[in-house]
Image (cartoon, rainbow, N blue to C red; front, side):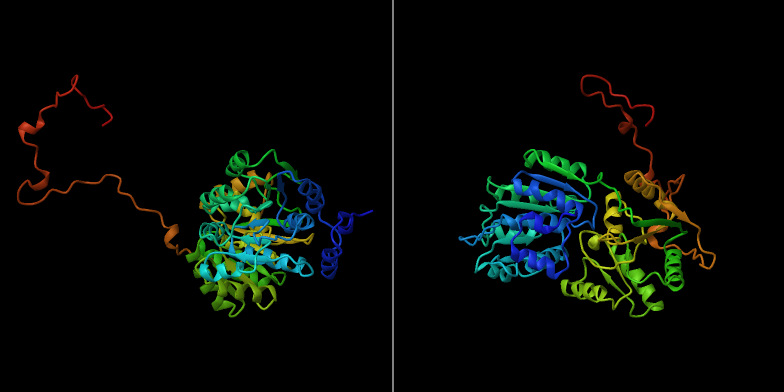
Amino acid sequence: MSVTFADFGLSEKVLDVLAEQNIFIPTPIQERSFKPILSGRDVMGIAQTGTGKTLAYLLPSLKSWKYSKTGNPTILVLVPTRELVIQVSEVLLRLTKKLTARVIGVYGGKNINTQKLLFDNGCDILVGTPGRVMDLSIDHAINLKEVRKFIIDEFDEMLNLGFRYQLTNIIEMLGSKRQNILFSATVTEAVDEMLDEYFRNPVEISLVRSGTPIEKIRQWVYRVENFNTKINLLKFLLAQDKEFRKILIFCNDKKRADSLFTNVEKSFPGCFDVIHSNKSQNYRLHAMKTFESGELLGLITTDVMARGLDISGITHVINFEIPEVPEQYIHRIGRTGRAEKEGEAVSFMTRKEEMALLEIEIFMNKEIQEKRFPDGVKINLQKIASEKEEVKMKNPVNVKLSGGKGAFHEKKEKNKKINLRGSGKRTVSKKY
């Protein structure tokens, strides 16, 4: 007999909200996380992306939550991006709509003085990015001493984004009587170091080893000449394969994402949009909503969209460029194949990217199937700037100035003397 959320002893109000969303059966990570989190011990959860990590830490946290009489947050959730703040906050607002919990989400890029006003009526559960939470605490807009559950989602990505300083400062601002909870799809050496320093004998909940991709995601790779030929291949696949219904296309760089969008827009006008950190928050949110609703065929983006975001029905993830960090590949392809559905991940690889793909295969302990390059795709030999090799002169020649010795004259005899200062004569090694 299957375990249901009713077996977890959740309040009727929370169960009613779950039922309204047709959520009755917990995923494996949700089932295995519940008791350890309720026990009050520090927890480290490792689960593949798309397996329900958000509810895995929110539901048991809500079960033990109590209204804050002082108005200071008792649950703090840190996530790496603004989009994740919005997503987790929306999930919390739905779960607590029949409770008295005050949920606030904060992130950078918004006026901090406007965000300070959000706390005038108190806060029970705070969701935010590390930088903005630290700034609000320093400005005394919030007091973190009463936080009893400190939850870090996508910890490795926070460290990759350079948030270590903010994280350590926030930890120093917290009270000692707290539970630390960490959830991520991958665990790196940097994460292990932080765990050793700040977590107290955490319970490890690991369904699979770190870096294991979801089995239902089919993966393959095309060997491609260069960036411009990749554009031709992408257009060919989009025109030939009707299975590409809702796709995310990842580039490693904002400039190249914009360049790809400009090219694709010419062949598929109004079918795509582009999202990266240079786009305004309102622009990004609008693009995500139109993509979620099915108005767009796809989004072209950078790794800003690789983490945690739950957009339903993505059929394909295309790695237009191979990510330099193997963990990022796992997070990228995890945008498809979510909630037990099947998905497909396609990668375009040039000769320079072969080693990066090999590292990904070693990390996953899985070989990615290579597909034959389609005959109908035109090879464009023109290289973009980043693909052009730097030209180096093998034997540079010293140019002598005409009309006199100039700057290249022989040293005067008095300057040829060997310096004998010091304890002994200094000689120059033969290799110089």
